[in-house]
Amino acid sequence: MAIATSSFLCFLLSCSLLLAHGGEIADSHHHVIVTNSLIPAKTCTQSPKVSGSNQLRKLQVVHINGPCSPLGQGKKTNLNLGQILLQDELRVRSIHSRISNSKQSPLADSKAKIPAKSGRSLGTGNFVVNVGLGTPKRDLTLIFDTGSDLTWIQCKPCAVNCYQQNEPTFDPSQSSTYSNISCGSAECTQVGLATGNSPRCSSTCIYGVLYGDNSYSVGFYGRETLTLSASDVFPNFEFGCGQNNRGLFGSAAGLLGLGRNQISLVSQTATKFGKKFSYCLPSTSSGTGFLAFGNQVGTSSSSVKYTSLLTDSRGNSFYFVPLLGISVKGQRLAIPPTAFTSSGTIIDSGTVITRLPPAAYAALRSAFRQAMSKYPSTSSLSILDTCYDLSGYNTVTIPTITLHFGGGTGLAVDSSGILVVASLSQVCLAFAGNSDPSDVAILGNKQQQTFEVVYDVTGGKLGFGAGGCS
Ligand SMILES: *[C@@H]1O[C@H](CO)[C@@H](O)[C@H](O)[C@H]1NC(C)=O
Image (cartoon, rainbow, N blue to C red):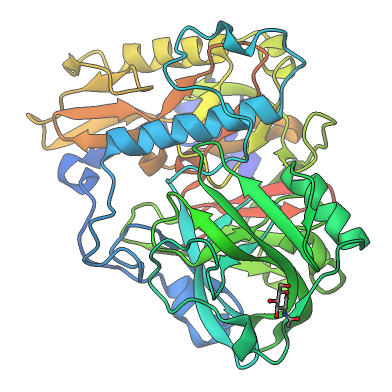
């Protein structure tokens, strides 16, 4: 029925491209944006999807530095776009070094001002959720990250160092349910494998995780009761109780690891949730989204479209997806399929800007520039090389961009995921290219905004549901 209607429309409008891709009905070819709406608001707008009383089991997701965040208000921690892009690049380099195609010369990169680090990935374009830990329960705001496995928080007595955090630091001695994990245990071996650092022993298991920007957390690997909602309580959740923590964690209490490895939250709650979770990231830093688990997943959007979730021996923490092509204005770009297959692609909640294989980015950039040719271009900003001065315009008409995945599933990127704004006189295409064709492509969080992104790990599929947050 829907196909027949759009075929008829196509006939009328002679828009032969609408049905070009395996019956996927493309959207119209342009977004019209009021330029003032590109400037982030300073007040928080709650989404009804998480504030409703029937949504109590969903965790509210907010941007770490936005006005909805308990960490963002009145703090001088806000980074400008240039600083965010620099952190984003450090995260991407760290991911590239973890998922390396056995390259011979990681130092051949001419942009080597920023050294590639072999640590875990962090980044700062991050989103936070509030979870409960311990007995009695203490509420803690944590960065959530699909690119990390270990969950850790800062713990008293902060024997070596704790950075300043917003909430009181968790004190395991005040909780009746905390216990240490012993040195010789299988769990201790696992945390070593997952963090890439062999665990050390005092009387108990000591973990250490180093992130790509030299942030780190070191402490006791322990067990504690984790409360996600009144009906989702997990005794003996394994986590890092950090005694020495340093870095760019905003003033969050720690990090919630949603990676694929066996120590992640997703794996530890598998019996109840079946390794199913989803999130919706809001279109602006002043909006709210959610993080949901188990049977809450897939309920926020009427139409979730699925592609496969792939595994790849290069990185067992990451969620690989079959990105196959890109359309601009409904027209499929001529990109050789090998450009995507030789790199592979992951979806990541903590990388901001999508990184494409060089040939794919070149094609996207060229089509985008052509569609934007009436607007004055301006200087590049860090990794973003396609920028415009829109200060003289009340509205701007931009082309639609659709990412095509295996199975005929398309992600018609929301208008909020196409441009990134330094100021109205420097508004840039929110995509970048990898420099090496073998580096993994990354679907970043900017392009995931407003969709309910469904991870069904056991079912081997990943879905996008439009209108997920609002
Ligand atoms: C956990 O181990 C640390 C270091 O040995 C110790 O100080 C602490 O009391 C232990 N906690 C519990 C609950 O056993």
